Image (cartoon, rainbow, N blue to C red; front, side, top):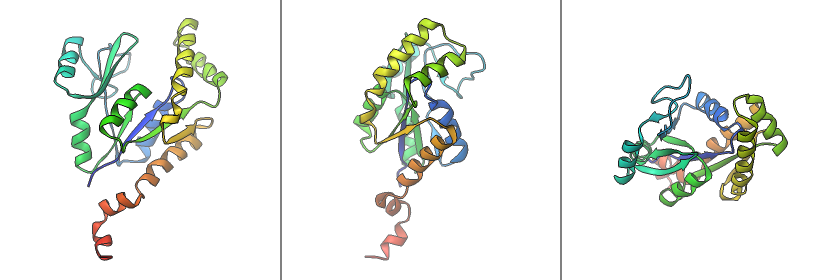
Length: 202
């Protein structure tokens, strides 16, 4: 029995991190893949919880050994997803969730074409700007850069099977839970999880 692989992607400020956290709180059957990064920890972050923090040399060695399912350099820092951990979890029948960008999603699909893609959209660019400004953590220049990047990211929405508009958090959470639950009800998944029931039909 193999687990499902979920890919959740969204532009900065669309609420992806919050929705993923709430999904994990509501569904204990999903394991979140913790990425490796070369960026420094931010206040309150813990190694092994938000990220596996490492230096550039170690990260490059892991790339050379083929240990990443996907990796990318973003704003001068490198981020990577452990291929070995994901393959181990899925082989054990556990569902895994990746919280990555559209470029990473493209790389993942080359090795896991059956991965289930979910794109989180803001209700509008105006609302996205309001949320980014409301954070109070970025300068006007950084916010402008994030908005431009968001517009480019959202052009790739057609590459994902499911799209959730995060205009109201609880409704968006319900939509995300529905995607997960429905994927587990596919005939192939049910046959895999309950072979004894289907064996009686032969």
